[in-house]
Image (cartoon, rainbow, N blue to C red; front, top):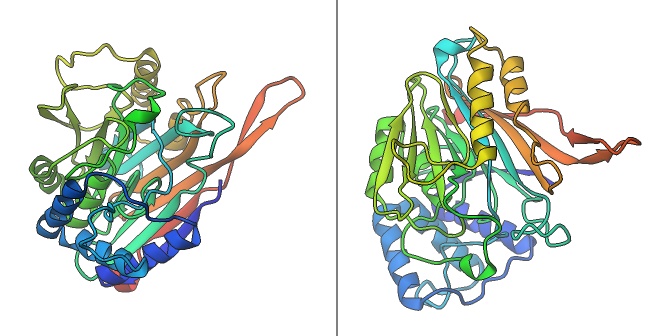
Length: 360
């Protein structure tokens, strides 16, 4: 894995230009994709709903020498790779931690091969980027991004301590079929909605309204989200399997989430692996009164790298502090095979990212 930290300040148009230059340096080309009519309406939608992203799209178009009205191209999307996501996450409200800070602790799980879980394929999650944005319009944020350089957020935090994380919700069976991926629709795909929340919301109440007000579609995998703020509030946002109803589950203190729907009377049977991880998290936490960071790391470690015999790994463990907004994260580096055929999973040290003091 090679992880880059990219810090950009300026107008959203300038941020878009810098993202496009990064994409070009990575060899990302723009090719005709999607329905031209939908591409046209998508641009109009973002211009109305999320002006900062529209300005970034303008910057991307200029760097690529592409007129905005060439609707053969889906300019709102810069596909790094396609990929799916699993994961386990816990939100600890301030009263549960020894330092009195709200903490979101999350494992991001995915295969080490391609998006169809083929080990010899393209390593689709081997180049995540920690994007740190200080836009002239919208809230500064630090977020781990992959798959779509322009809009995608896997997890992140903004300068006001609002923290977001996505997790697959178990509606879709993996691996998916190749023809079902890379959907282009009007609205926000499952990762772009988190970019919208980070840059427009300060509190969970604002985030609820934001998520209920926008158009959602699935680009690759149906997901649910956990969102928390600096006051100690959290909630889980998810859709019914046929996506005709949204559900909000408020946290009442501790809130855990893995990869199955948790709203009351959810129709699908939880995956055993996901349910086991959820139970492990909840049972581990109730045994401790006040948790320090070492305990929080150890608890997430209990549900890391448990896909025995597969190529799925916990690719990073991230800790977001919503009280003093920051990110501390370690990244997966590879496997060490021991003489007895057991495996040691190798990780970087934890790396901490904080907001620039002159931008607060």
